[in-house]
Image (tube, rainbow, N blue to C red; front, side, top):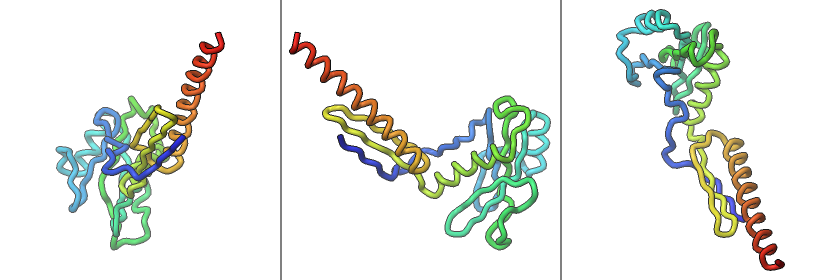
Length: 170
């Protein structure tokens, strides 16, 4: 058996921000959003009218970008390198009647890890069998997936070998 785990090269974003489920509406001067809202207030008004929950998003930008949702103002202690970034909109049809700050934070945390490059892929080989997959965020996720793939391939190889041995014995 051989297992290879490596950094994923140029992985897709884990949070495509499905326009029907969630939207990251960016209003930062250096980063452009893909929306038609002229102001954060206009985005808030639309979201309220359409039944979406709004979470303000702040960014710390210094040798990278870290995003945080906060309902109480800027959560970062550095006023020079942090500030308002945009809004995270969560559709109540998909996120429940009362989407929580914890849900918004979890979504942004996965996005942050992707931006930091904590992205992985694996390849598992058992004999002539191979399984590979990428797009995992975090080493725990890729290790778990590789372990499951190895178990499955080992079970398949074992079943095949037992079937071969049975046919030879019969």
